[in-house]
Length: 344
Image (cartoon, rainbow, N blue to C red):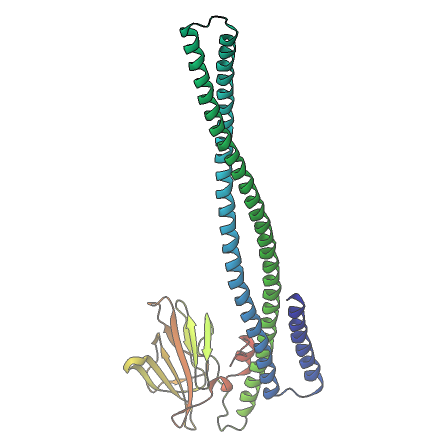
């Protein structure tokens, strides 16, 4: 399994290295980058499946190991109990042997006595009966001791087998953990490489979109309406800013306020007319400070973010003839470089 992991890891490394060499000699295309992302994603998925399978096997093996430990501990408890019973049996045996010796001694003395009257004969008969009784009791104790000894031997054998199984399972768990770690490291490396390729792909897509604005009839390059924000999201229409606290909202380009107020469920809205049928829209959690008809210069404060919400959002969009444009591609280079906008 380790050799298989190394082969996959080497495959990813070679693919990525080949891509870098290719990129240095041949113009990188979006299509090539997308193929590389898909290829690395397959490797990532393979590692994810193998890790998941290992985790399942590891879980079952660990449960089996714990069960074996519990069974071994249960047998050891029985062993201790059986040893105690055997020790008690030996004590009982010794006691009965001593008692039998005492009876035999008395019987021997009776046999040496020359007195053969009825009382003496009755006493010998009683002692002989007692000897038989003690012999039978001794036989019972002896059989019990033999039984306990047999049980002890069987328990020790089973405990030894469980100890071997326990040791084997512990070694297996350790091997699987090491294998899992190796695959996890390879998985992280593959994800990192995929992320790097995706960054290049995103940057290339953004570059292509920004170049496309040269063909657009919108000459302006818009600045960000919010300079201080905690997060940013955008698609092929507008940009959504996330912010905390009070922040100034700025005019993204020169123009005239076409509308300022509240608009249905969108919240507060400021619409700036930049001429040539081009307008910019700012809406969301903010309070406008400008009125319709006022002229603004790029960077003028047109309002402030609303501090009544702990996490506010502000949406910005550029429209041409009332049609949403690819706003991120119309932003000025200062904004793109400052905030390292690359993900599309």
